[in-house]
Image 1 (cartoon, helix red, strand yellow):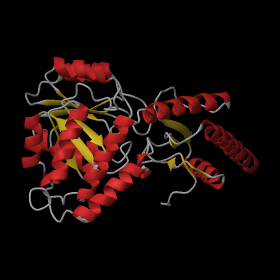
Image 2: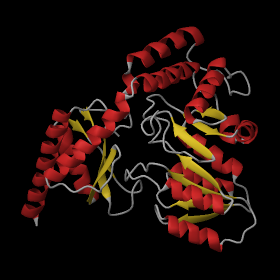
Image 3: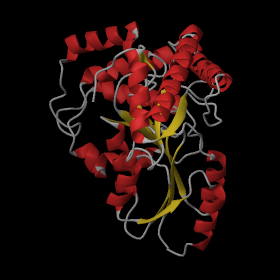
Image 4: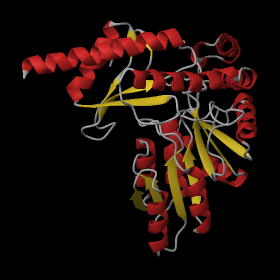
Length: 355
């Protein structure tokens, strides 16, 4: 572990909101008004009107009946899967799903099927063959955090509907950026989970969906019932975040434009990355040690691009996970490509000399 150092190419602060003056001011004023801690779970003394107001606003933002705020995305995913899916039910989970979705499915004790990443045909085949009488759930991320690719959500929604299944979408890396208003990619999902510590710039996560489902979570979800509520000031910061997303749409336009620019410049430099359109660009290096050394070389040149190694990614696919934010300028991206090309060339020469 190391603290941030250099120009940010690794965080999830895609819109640059974590240091936005409006969020800082809102949070500071709320701390002076509400204090630093909530003092208990929301079912005890931890409830505040600020949480209820924020949840109403986020539900409207996502176009759902209700929303419920959790203190982390991990807890939100655990709560959704472990609460709704029960023994006798069936969960169909994308092979590249986040650890929190995997752990939530395990805690549910429902039957679990893993389908190949992004393969709608394989999902349909699995569901066609299933004879279990319980409720079926299709679980996926919308924008995958390590590969930066987007799930075929329209196909999943159609397949789920055909089989009477409920579609659950982790919209963590898409909310705030995608759709005309930044609401994300979850679309027709029965339940969506939207992390607030990435593009929204603060912390926690929202579960959004039908009113009855949110009421059920409040009464039955152990990660909600038995967790101390987040500091009330967080709600004020998130209200400000939603305001900025509404007022400054150029941020989400710019982050995707910068990502497209970087992909083009990498290709021109002969550095191969997968095709894509998102703000997450994986540079797969393969060898763990090489990935670490390239990241170190970039740090020495003033850029913070972290190496990702197993178990976060499959064996043999260690990578730099390049994460683009709206604050990066085209000249900065040009300098980064030059530094990356130099680091890769130096490591290749070093390997050739030692062999």
